[in-house]
Image (cartoon, rainbow, N blue to C red):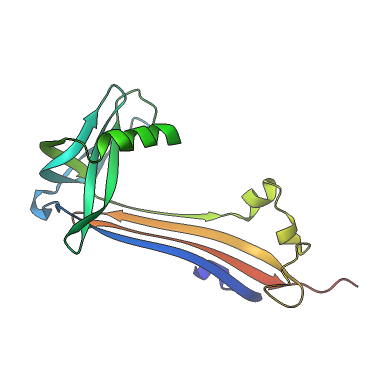
Length: 191
């Protein structure tokens, strides 16, 4: 996170996670074509739509259609991506309980042969978390009143906290990374 590496930073703490999953059945690149994508706002935009004809775990009810797309590593299925398409008028948000029921009913159940059309996409987003954390009542870290002594000697306070995420889904699989960086700056001791 280049944004937090600026003077007079005393210390930069970084936490990162990375994932790269290869589809067990890859989408064929020559079948990818430009199609319309209907957004939840009602607008329509062009996108590259991937196509896969395969036997996959599939479920449909009055609220959504869902499919399990397995990832493969060393010849074994190691993980599944669950892709959910809400039906028109159905809510986009799903509670943890609804996700758990979907997972139990979908993955590992009967497979259906069909053609899946799915957008190829890359999404990047970055968030500055300092103001949100302060509004949530975590203020001492940013004013130098919280004890960070076990990590660093001398007076320090958190200057910035930035979270960045990138997710790319294409014909080969999924690649995703997230990083959170925290910059600490020195503060003068009280008089």
